[in-house]
Each structure stands twice: as C-alpha cells, then as structure tokens.
Image 1: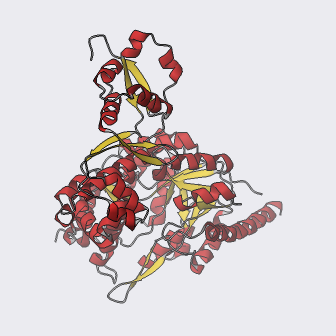
Image 2: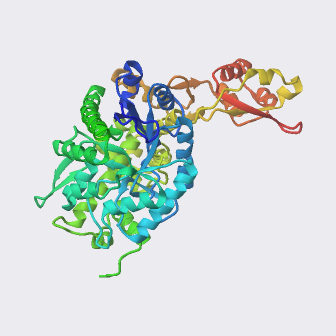
Image 3: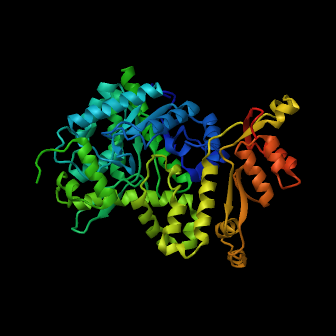
Length: 290
Length: 262
C-alpha cells in the first residue's frame, strides 16, 4: 500500500472519533486505518483522555481543532493555544489541523466557524496566526476550507486562491473538505471543479468527507448546511473521485457529528472511501511504472 | 450607507452584534444578497451559536434540564447566553455562572432546589474534566520526621471538590438522572443542609459526608497544617479519613508550614 508522505497517517480512510463510540472502538478494535479526534474534546483529564490514550496505542490519530480562531483580527487566545499544545504533546498525533475561519471577537467565543472576508488584510492576519501556531506546536498545520452561508461584498480573492496563498506563505498544508467545497459551491454558485483545480496538489495533506442538509428558506431558495448528520451525498462522492484524480491518494476522513449513528455506519462510509483510494493507488502505481 | 469596506475588526464586531444581540443592521450591509436575504444568512450563524451553547450547557447540566423541562431550559439558557456569552473556546469551561444565574432567574427561582442541583452538576462537570495528576506517594510522607508531618500542608487533586448545599441536591440529582420518579417523590426538599464530596474514581462519585468530616476535609484541601486541622477536627475518625483521602489519590502534593503557622 502506498503510504502517505504526510506524517504517520496512512493514505487510507479513517473515521472521526466521537464520545458515543469510545467504548465500541476499545472493545471491538474495528478495522479502520486511522481515527481523528477533536482537540477541544480532550483538554481535560479523566475518562475521555484515557480512552484516547488507549486508542492511540492501536491506531494512528490526528487532531482536528475548532477553537483557535486563526482568522480573528485580535490576537490568538494564548491560553487556548497552550491547551492545544498540551493535547498535541500528549497525543503526538500524525496530523494536526484547524480551519480557515474565525470565532472570537472582543474575547467572546461565538461557537462557530465563521466566514472571513477574502481580503489582503484577512490573508495577512491568517498567515500571521498560522505562523504563530506552527512555531508554538513546532509542526506543520493543515488548514481546512470552511462551509459558508454568506459572502462579503468587499472580498477580492477567490477562496481557493486565499487558501493556496496561506499554504504558500506559511508552509502549512491544506485539509481539503470535499463536502465543504460542494456545500459552499452550491450556496454561492461556484464551480467545484474550479475550486479543486485552484488548490496546489502538493499541499493537500488530508481530505474530509461528511453529510450535509438542504434547508428550504421562506422565499423558496435553498441553502445547503454542513451539519455532518447523514451519509456522504452522491454528488460529494463524485467530487471526491475528482479530488483523488487530481491529488492522488490522500488520508481521507469520514466525519459525523449530528445524530451520530452506530459505529458500523461510519465504518461502511470509510470502506467506500477506501475502495476509491485503492483504485487511485493502482492508477498512480501504473502511471509510475509506465 | 457607509460605502467604505470595513476593517476585519469592524466586520467581526458587526457579526458579533448580529449573532449575540440579534442586531443585523451593520453586518447585513456587508453581505452579498444573491437571492437570499442577508438576514436569513446571518440567522443560520445565530442559530448555530445558540444551539451549540445550549447543547454544551445541557451536557453539563443534564439533571437541571430534566427538572425544568427542555422548553424552559432552552429559554433560560438563551437569557444566560445573552448575559454571559463564553469567553473560552473550551466549552467544558463554559457555564460556571449558570447556578448563580438560576437563583436570579424568575422562571426557576421558585424551585429553590434547582440552583443547588446546578451547583452540584457544575462541580461534577469540573471533576469530570479536571486534569490528571499523580497521587501523593505515601513514602514521601513516611520519610518525614514527626515534627515535619505535623506541619504538612496538603494540596488536593483538582478533581476533588466539596460542596455544602441547602437542599438534598445529591439525592435529587441521582434520582433525576436514574429516571427514578419514586425515589424523587420520596425526597423531602426541605431536608438540609447536606455536605458532599465530589471526586473521581472510574467515573465521578458524589459522597455525602457528616458535617465534621466535611469540615476536616475542607481544612485539609485548603492546606491547613495537619496538626491544626487535626486539633480542630470535631470527628473521631479524622486520621482514618486522612488515610482514605490519601489512598484514593485525592491529595497530590504537600509543602511544610513554618513553625509559626497554624
């Protein structure tokens, strides 16, 4: 199998580790190549951390954060960065990721991954905070593209270009969330193929897949909402195939956060991604041999 | 309308006013309408903010949630979020002021035991998430002289906490989480105060102590020199309690008081 050159996480499918599955994962040791945990869920001690440390012994783990607010105009919350650092030092994950978004202003945490204006000012701020985070953690960070439900009038840079420039300036990698590309593309009338084509393949360190919902608004319009509450949509699988064709085999994670189903359902989604990864693997091996 | 693009900070403050204070006026002006009203787009973020925090508080206060009912809980939480939005991205730390808020909150203040159950639940939450620490090695205590042992000031494990509650909130909490309506009906809410120790074993345990045992434990946890805590102890089993706290890892370190301390 082609091993990822991107840390200790293999270029295979993994699943998001959620509290309801802690015991099942420990008891049944499911056949899955790796797991990803939310950094913020393991900032204390006790039972949760013990589960994670137990699982860490048998599976490659990545840590995915939601609270650093890399896009805040204000400084990064130093206390939160220290908490992230402690979890990273304790777990020694294969990959560490965060989001291209913001959630803190006036020291208040707005508990969401909020959209940034795509401006030179925001780009400079995000790069400064990514630099600071990478220096503190002493490792490369992956930055994930968000799902968004609005755009700002004064944005001047396409999101894919913004993300590529963050990667180029800071040396960080990109966590390409294929579901988020699809959701944002539907919501804003973008072409998802243009988005994928705008990302630098060498920077892609991980792919995310998840389900989303469609919400009908009062005026008859529809917005797609990234709720991680269902199976991956057929159109997102199709876009994933395009992403693999472009990026090659990349560690791929299936996330599910709302109405979390039995573990087997997640494993089924991961198995489907694995089939596609193996196919890509073979195609890349054949191309190398030719 | 101001046509100058906002700075990032100005934009983020406008988003804050939209999400926390439902004031969309400024933020909406910065948003591409594109077939959907900017207010509807902002509403999605406002709803997420409220639902994530409501869920976080429901996880920290499950018994309060059941006691007052989902609808009342959500209403009260909305008021609480307005007054005290989170100041940390670690939501395990959010909601410390919720019990005090409940005491001032009209819909639930008539149920006097609810804020007490909330205080207990917050301590349970703290205990659940407290950082790990190694128990105090008994050999370190054994190596001290008798004079030094008398001057020991203990440091408790951050997962161990003490609570004096006016109502039997521990019994109510247990019955509510067990869905045991018969046990709940049998509780006399006027009984009290009760003195409890919240600590971590495999899970979280809430143990009722006698008042003297609680006061002795409080003196130990507060770092009173051991001889002084023992002298003031109004219980016969103080030494035995100390041994239990040590064996259970509730004490993690110590320092020596100088001779003048008491």
